[in-house]
View 1 (cartoon, helix red, strand yellow):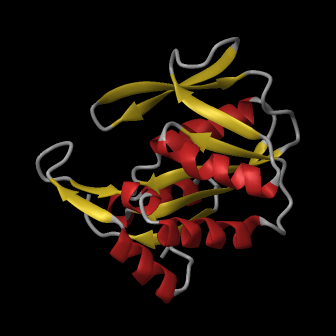
View 2 (tube, rainbow, N blue to C red):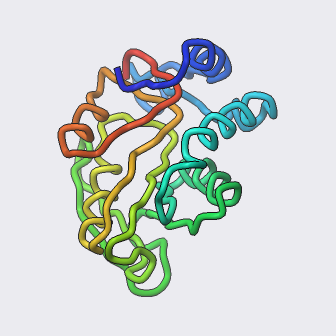
Length: 185
């Protein structure tokens, strides 16, 4: 099990996250975290648990994945006083970037980061809203390694264990941490 939080936090957060059936495709159960942002108590609990986990750990930067990862990543960067690294879809960052192509369920995508945003030897905490197939987080790991840095952990609010993303990340040597999990896609 890749969800590492206490059962009371898991139960609470699961009760606060809306599930939207058949979106964006038939058969998908979309886990909508906008309900956390709309509920100050739920958002505070989410952030507080993440802050408690990382406030005493040694790392240099927080990497946030496009787009919902930006919300959690920027909040933690502010509270923990860490620089924020943005990982964006191709063509969204100005200036010189490093990029990597990665596989999606039906095709390919490109992930980018500014080439001067991560320094060799640094340790990066990666943040996203959920771990599904792990493809985007693995692409971010490749960019970080290409810059000579490494990952402390890949953290998210939700794990979707049926999609095996956390397993892929762990097999690649990337520890994972999530606050709750949901079965299904």
